[in-house]
Length: 144
Ligand SMILES: [Cu+2]
Image (tube, rainbow, N blue to C red; front, side, top):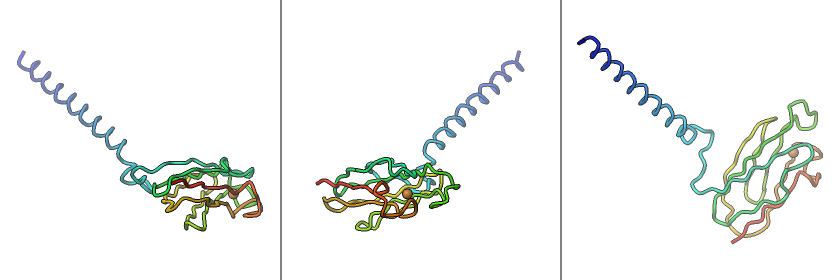
């Protein structure tokens, strides 16, 4: 009888440890990207997803608020076998010093804060005719 009770106690401790460990692992899994993601999101940043393909950007207009951080997540859908640009795409805004290049079939992000209302041109210059290609360009419209 005594042994059985002792076994039950050990089993309960074991189950409790397992639950605690599972909870800790779950919390770590949820929090990890904030600590060692390539770039944690700026607090309150608006996020825009944009895809680059040989057909152009998935969005030709992006809207943002002046003074509010904006994260642009650029995904290149193309493979590295593209002879023109090697499957990379770029998102650049000269006036704001923004420049990010997504490798083939990958996503890269950049966070910046548009300082003032206005219309800023973004473009990709690593593929498909470069800046001369009207489909690899768009407008960032920044509102007050
Ligand atoms: Cu491109």
